[in-house]
Image (cartoon, rainbow, N blue to C red):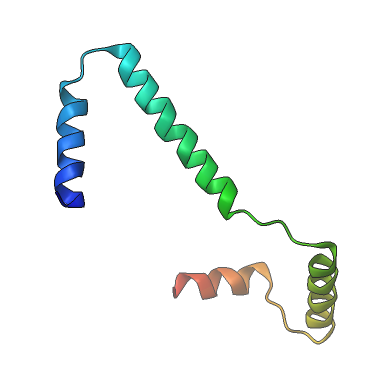
Length: 79
């Protein structure tokens, strides 16, 4: 059975489910897994990475490599 068929079967099952408790458990399981996936994707910066980023930003500012708010908004309108 391919993934698309399995998804449709699950949707059908959920649509017919009448037990609030069972539905709540399934919902909590899905939400919990989504939160775990988000946490797994998050990798905090190390102190060295943060310091390097700050130095680079300061150099960019000093050399004039930055945009003010108006310039940024004009650029983002072109996206």
